Amino acid sequence: MIERCPSGALTFNVEGEAIEPGLPVEIAVIPDGPLWVTGDVEVTGSDGAPLERRNRVTLCRCGHSASKPLCDGSHKDTGFTG
Image (tube, rainbow, N blue to C red; front, side, top):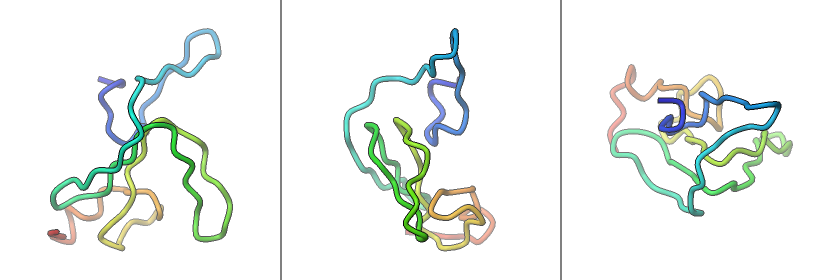
């Protein structure tokens, strides 16, 4: 379950080492949802500070996320389509 989390918000460690699935560098549009970025791509916040580097993240497309640039699922409540 954790390894299939699209956002990477769910993770686990074994002996202090983060375990994440190997994913290619890609950006995909999730219909009516966020952008799904994989492959250990660096993401920088609007303040210029880099986010924790992860192998997968989901980025807000609707503009309503309270944790921008990351998606928090707000698109579901706002009826975002796109």
